Length: 358
Image 1 (tube, one colour):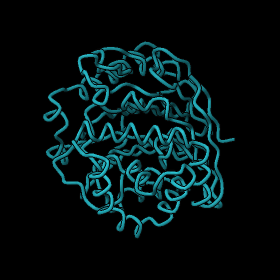
Image 2 (cartoon, rainbow, N blue to C red; image 1 turned 180 degrees about the horizontal axis):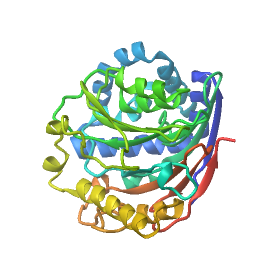
Image 3 (tube, rainbow, N blue to C red; image 1 turned 45 degrees about the horizontal axis):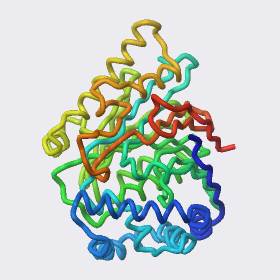
Image 4 (cartoon, rainbow, N blue to C red; image 1 turned 120 degrees about the horizontal axis):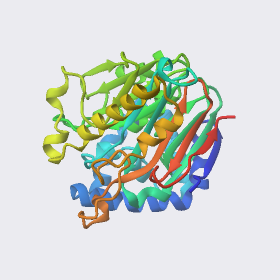
């Protein structure tokens, strides 16, 4: 099913207002569904979630006043409140994220059919939210234009900008306590506002961070930088062998002791997805030495270890839909190309649609 392309322009407040007005119905459904998910996963009512948000907002208003202006615009345009939209943009900081997350793949230019890096990922999240995602094209007064697959009302998620910066994500679960730093989705937006990859990396590592997250950043030169960003520490990884894969566990040996994803979830599915992708890519490269977008699409649609597969499907054994995960989209970008290919829904079932910056 094609996603709606929502175009906004102007300063932060104006862009937020346009986003809120154009996605008013989706935002209201998104808020209702997210409050149900928060209640199910961590027992917080809307009122308690608002209380938690109020303890965070003053600090974020100080360190990111422009993004808070945009959030106010979204709230005004959608006839909701600033606090509600703030919570939507700080879900990882409002609760420990449920188990089950995204798969990121990147193949360097020396191993692709047309000599351009291919970077892709699945976005796995709750099925209640599936029809509330859009493709947002944001043209600021100055700085690069942004094209992002994102939830209605969310500042940014996965996407690219007109300077060739691409941003891809994985959630982490660690022993750390969530702090008053910059929320993860705010950082994602900052990455996509940058002209150069150095600025994109700085948006992560020079920022006091509120929660652990993995940010994979690509650029026009074909380079890839994966920042495993914990709250008080980080490491930067690259694809030294030309193939890079990341799921939801920490890869850096020095930081691995803080990772609790597998132990807490009691499910090694992040490990099985990681090694399954590597095996599939190596099989392709063993047959024909280079691979293309169609090969990546087949990997993203793989069902090994179903339903907790790369192409994730709902686990029917989980009785409450608030606790389920599925692949909501698969997204692909080629180095230097001003577009993203998006398959909305499970990539085993639907077709990819081309969304362009031009």
